[in-house]
Amino acid sequence: MRLAAILTALLSGPALAERITSRDAFLSLVDQRRLTTIGVTLVVTPDGRIGGSAFGSDVRGDWTWDSGWFCRTLAWGSRSWPRNCQLVVRDGDQLRFTSDKGAGDSATLRIR
Image (cartoon, rainbow, N blue to C red; front, side):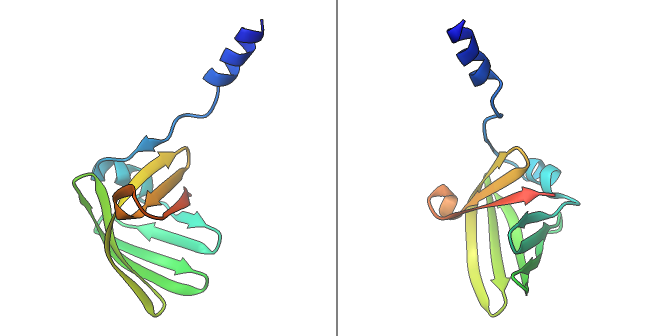
């Protein structure tokens, strides 16, 4: 009986995170949607643009899909960041972007 309860709990848990490996799969998640977290709202468009706002300042950038990585430039207020290719992982209604091809810092945004 106890084993059955443990197995039920394990099997009914949330789906495992899934790496996004193609431009088409990525666009199927973000096209016509917003990516949000506290103070941040972004829109990623099929034509390679990033727009939105973060803590009251405009965000803008460009993106491409390159060999399984989301690669982007980004500007926010007076700051800008050069091209960086990132690992993208979906977990339910969230996307986690990890810089430096998965070796750097990460940010998790909710798909709305």
